[in-house]
Amino acid sequence: MESFWIAWNAVVPFFIYFAFGYGIQKTGIVDKPFFIRLNQMIFKAFFPVMMFNNIYRTSGGQGVSGKLLAVNIACVLLLIGASMVAVPLLVKENPRRGVIVQALYRGNCVLFAVPLAENVFGAEGASLASMVLAFIIPIYNVMAVLILEYFRGGKPSLPQLLKKMITNPMIMGAAVGAVFLWLGIRLPACVEKPVKEYAALCTPLACFVMGGTLQFSSVRKNLRYLVPTLTVKLVLVPAIIVAVSVLLGFSPLERFVLYSQFAAPVAAASFSMAQAMGGDGDLASEMVVVSSCVSVFTIFMWIFVTKLLGII
Image (cartoon, rainbow, N blue to C red; front, side, top):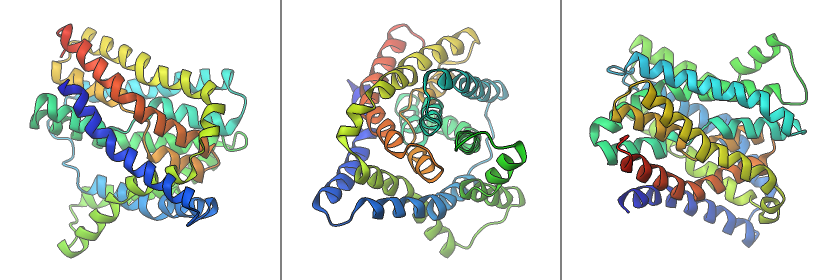
């Protein structure tokens, strides 16, 4: 039951953010175009600050096994590659293709993987999970830009993709953060504080917008996409990752860090990126909301099963 409450406590704040946005929508205080404009602002102004802050504040990954990082990155890229092959065969519309591919590989790791690792393995678990994610999250975002641009109305050339990727606000924020980190540049404390606070606003604001644009009639219509995508995301992929981590001889802590990353629900940032870059914003929002609800039970199930089998 402890594992269930860990997952529950991680997901309840999201429900509150979603519900608040949905309530504001129903009161008529603001209309849907307002939420769309707010989402554009989040994507162009707040997410770059978040990306800068994530890189700027990282410890650089000291103490992370090279084998763990290599396997982790390989799993992410293999999952993306398999999705890029399979999804276009099953889904006709480009805006939905990009959203589904992004949902399959991109998890809400910071808010799920790190707290779960800390609760199961203590400070050592939180430290390892945070250091691994310092490498993985930039890959998530770079690949999301490439995927969404690829499915935005056709197949642009490689130079076009590279140009759009480089000028993407999130990539620019990450690049500036990397420069500060590598050069050892530190901001004054009076600047660091507002940067950290603006970065912390990203997830609540993105979830607020998701709630404000959520239509339950659309959820019913999109069940044919939601059910198979989230079954693969929350059940099949974690099972494969657990098996791979056992076969490769990782320690219980390393297995859990890998598992929790791939078992996390769809990242909230995927909605903002999808809506801002020509994806199906409604479907992206529903992927985040529904996966967050279902993951409370799937995470509990996986922790229970892996502990029962002595894997972690």
